Amino acid sequence: MILDLIKVFLPAAISFIVGISITPLWTSYLYKNEMWKKKAGKVSLEGNETPIFNGLHEKKEVGTPRLGGVIIWASVFITVALLWFASHFLPFEIFHKLEFLSRSQTWIPFFALLLGAFVGFIDDMYEIKGGGSNKAGGLSLKKRLLIVSLIGLFCASWFFFKLEVSSISMIFSNPINLGILFIPFFILVMLFIYSGGIIDGIDGLAGGVFAIMFTGYGMIAFFQNQIDIAALCATIVGGLLAFLWFNIPPARFYMSETGSMALTVVLTIVAFMTDTLGGGRGVIALLIIGAPLVVTTLSVILQQLSKRFRGKKIFLVAPLHHHFEALGWPSYKVTMRYWVISIVFCIIGVIFALLK
Image (cartoon, rainbow, N blue to C red; front, side, top):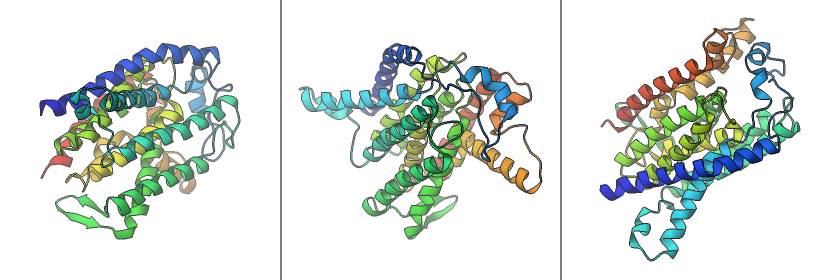
């Protein structure tokens, strides 16, 4: 038990220290090279201007660098690399026990993290340079959804064919076997959670919410004795806390797509890893632990449906956190209340996932 706790908490501490250490250099590079959007403002899904959002954030979008998410995944990568090197090349048995990069548990989420980060990095660079197929710069939504779908297809196939997972746990009943339908179901869940990544819209909001969610799944994995997954989640939390140190108002940089895509695809994979494989309800619990992402996505969907079929909006602006800003809430109040709600839902979700 003590060794397991060290295996979880030590990488988290290393990741945090690494993140804090590399941030000054990365921040200096971002500001020196003006790695921010050159034109403020966003466009709606229909390609129209968004005057309410632009009025709230126009001054913030220009002059604050993107690519802050690099701190998160770079911290995780460096931590994993350090422990791997120590376990293979240092003559101390303890490092063999602390390494958590394993084929059975963490290969898929770790490499999905790096792949999502890479694609998100490309999207951010297009947005910074003003290129891409989107009016606001960057890759179009269709292209990003296609890429996430392909990542989901690969991961779902790994679960189905390699790990022989085809069912999901349900509430107060036996798991439901989806058969080959498990693959499209996995992809749809990943797309839904990825779409919640637009929660990265207020200083400190996404960083805090993601840190809480990965803490929750780290706890679930730990109590399922999936220690490697718990250690990976803790390492991600360490990187997120380092990022958050510099992202709380006023933000030194934004997480942007290189962070949000990486985190959402990994969160989805971890949810499935802690489901039938771990004897828990990781997928259904995602609706609870991931409630901020779920609500964010639903608010956008409901807004679009209302405008299409009713001819008017439900919210002043979507997603929901910007609606609260439009009502006059200070951004820091929105952020901190989201943190509080996230903690409450995280506790409920962890209990629900582990309840026999």
